[in-house]
Length: 215
Image 1 (tube, rainbow, N blue to C red):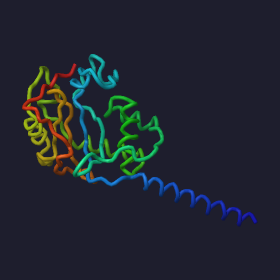
Image 2 (image 1 turned 135 degrees about the vertical axis):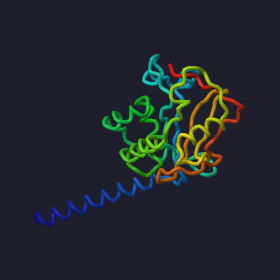
Image 3 (image 1 turned 90 degrees about the vertical axis):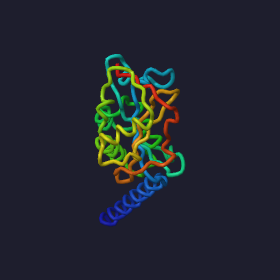
């Protein structure tokens, strides 16, 4: 009798685990590649909109590029978002990710909006975020400028390509808002290897962008 009861319990556990696994797989959405978004903190913090977390925007932080997110992207349009309910990001993951992303709310937001579409666990998703960011070198001209710069998107993309010789220049995109640098975007395949961006990655159409120095 005890053996039969144990067998029933084991079968129930396997069934529940399988159902959970199927739900996790179902939450993944089709996408073509990843877009690593690096936000330029000085211009974001100087703007009127957005959540100005002190971890990013407090005077003296002197942050330049920070990770905004790693987004599942479509070749032809915006990638999938909000692909299912997710659990809160654990304190252990947040502790590690604060070295890359300036704020707990941003970390949770990116997991909810974009990570939920990757079809992996939070641990795997944020490990991919770290791997993607660690693979990219920031150009020396943009590491910590001491004065306001003015560059075109093409110039900034060429600087990133020169700092990352293993990447094609077409793997980089620069975006802007109201003539100010918004983000550097890096296109990566699903194995986090550099690849050509598509038009859906966006690009600044202004002839030049203002790039404020870190403060």
